[in-house]
Image (cartoon, rainbow, N blue to C red; front, top):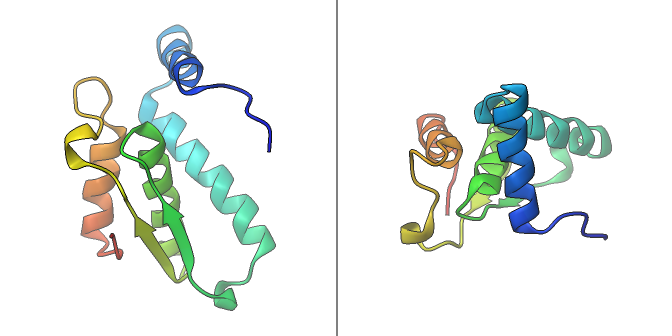
Length: 113
């Protein structure tokens, strides 16, 4: 695995895309989730076993929760683990991706740990 960008560089890329191109952060998150879902679902069967998605407390955690939601709604056995300090979670108004995905995950009653 090769690291292309570090955390600060990725945040700057997100910020540039949002500000320069006018693409909302929620759209970026959903596109990331759709790409993960498409690639993983192409490689594994629904009955292959449980999918564990480990999410951090920042925006990438929101991406992970969005991907988990897509797997869950498609009938996969999915579980989400968030080994994060709730005090360090991304808070509005900086970016609403993680809190929104957390709320959506709770609505769908996905198993969150």
